[in-house]
Length: 154
Image (cartoon, helix red, strand yellow):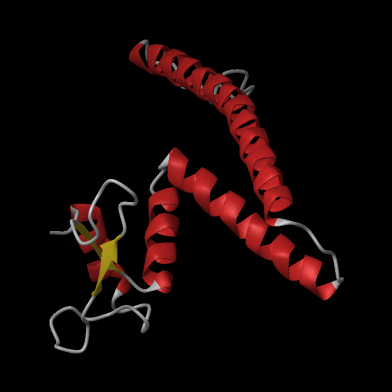
């Protein structure tokens, strides 16, 4: 079973991205993976369907584009981490996995804070626009062109 967003993504992106699998053919077979539950549980009780990494990345980018805040945080922090790893490799910077995890956690917290701050600023802009539109409508209802006020030719 697939989510409607996932189906939309496949439908809309199919003509744009040639790496997406076409589920109508026999060539696309998602890999079924057995999840090891660990001690106390038995292996094979849970299975998941694997998807190509490119499709997963495209899905989260699509969700981010649609305004999903969690998807935005995920895509930005993982993109930053990916670039950082490449730059570290290019410049022979060595970091432990724990250091990378700590940096990723810090970046995620900073991004969440920045988004909250930016959101407040955008909310203020939205309020100003609503007020402007409200007063412009009031003027129009009174037969006054709000953008013609102060026009010396009338």
